[in-house]
Length: 200
Image (cartoon, rainbow, N blue to C red; front, side):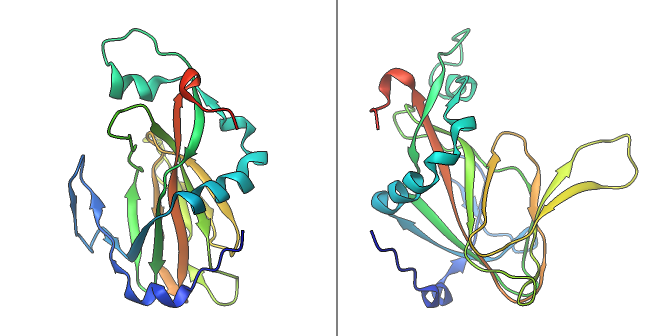
């Protein structure tokens, strides 16, 4: 499969919105200042997962806790879940000079039937090298109220770099770009009960 992404299309992106809960998004450029375009493409999402799968052994299965919250909150335990696919909604994000995304945790996505729930975010960086891009790191914040100074770890945007991060409670930010453009693609890893996953 040949994938050609025309990054010139990213000149028509819309202002990225903030997720405010189920079926609710709003614009606040003091909190999230960037642009995006969303593409629903199951075939491309499946191709990306096929390329990444050899490296995903540590996240192939999960304990099912997040599923329990969506499908049956009163259930005492929930069977393990298995990675089923990538969310077909691919969000292409663009940050220019002066743009940023303040500290936040990624939201969890579930399908309308609640059979599939996301546990991790996939971020693929589509631009960036040490000369052309300054700033724009994905910064992970350590929550430690005993420390006066902020503790963080930065992941720099570099063309081809893949970042996988937990969605539940992992505080991170998109630091301000000071030079160049940061372009990335973001989607979700979806999970379902072992018994519901079609073998690959």
